Length: 488
Image (cartoon, rainbow, N blue to C red):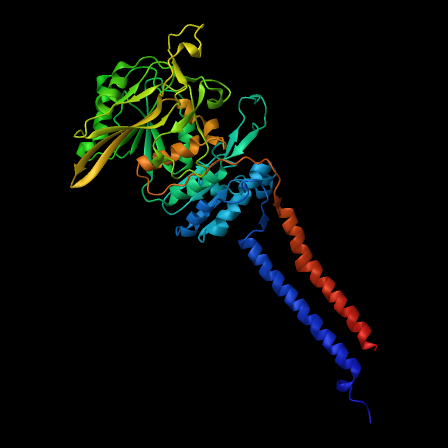
């Protein structure tokens, strides 16, 4: 009688090997299909840099998880070309993937405007390299200037290349844009011009990157927008007239409703402004002194005696600082004095930041022979808040005037410097004073170390290896085993 082939040793071993091989191949294919989907949704990135420059901060992650709005991110450039511009662009690209990962309704795409004219029609203001953030409420475009800080001092204006990037503020700008396009009522800040004001690029960049809507008006010819929450006066060189003072007063009073704010930025190079400074002093209790503060203690200034390290007075504005040990730097600050009002008055002033008692004031008319030892040592305010309180419709209301003795304290380079707290402190103070319900302070990041990160080329290589090569290798191995076993 013939042997039953199904009971033969060869069949049993061959069939088992075949089943195991097929099962293994199916398992590998399924695992790689799932892995590919997961990589697409949750990009692989092992960030070993100091400070995690390729990852979002915990605050941003928490915020993105709460966002319900549908947000579209459109990068107006081919992805490979965008990443080829260097490590800061690569960092931005990695951060964009994280926004998509943590935002449940966030989409991301890279589009070459020249090859996709319909995108240009949809976003007529967009230019190549812009990042466009869109929701159903509004749209905001970010340029490379919004994303990075550049070394403009050593830049050759005739060069066809971008200046060297010194640090990234991409997360700050992107998170601010996300908040801007999803927030119901973003805070409006208006710059007053018409009196040869100083450049306000630094504070404007800080506000824009953190969800403030900014614009400007000429106070000589225009009224202040009643819908604005904040008015910013950036170190004017010529004095206000009575008519403009009345506009300021009317804005702050707001028909008795209050709820308005003024930021006044002083400058050591300003001339005397009797009417404007009298308004700040008599009405709001903040006196701007002559000259500027100089530090005599070498441990309390940075590089120059006028770049003074100062101390926080009111801790209510330092609670949200990530590193409370970091110092604040106030260069060339005008000396500020706060008036003490009676308890029955509806006004009060608070010194928020001041110099140490080892500082002196250099008068504006000092001779070239003047040295710090000629000055009188004392404590001088550099950031002072004046507040008026009232009641409207049985609800307590306030208006505020914040005077900062140095516009240089809000220079873009100091705001971007991660070793000092200027950017973080002032943004926290603004958010608190203006009753901004939700604000994230994201500090710029400098890339100084390498990251163990899977680039797109590595991801492609791994995908080919695991999705194609590994299954083929397993199949070949299975066939070899099957062929050998069928001859047993």
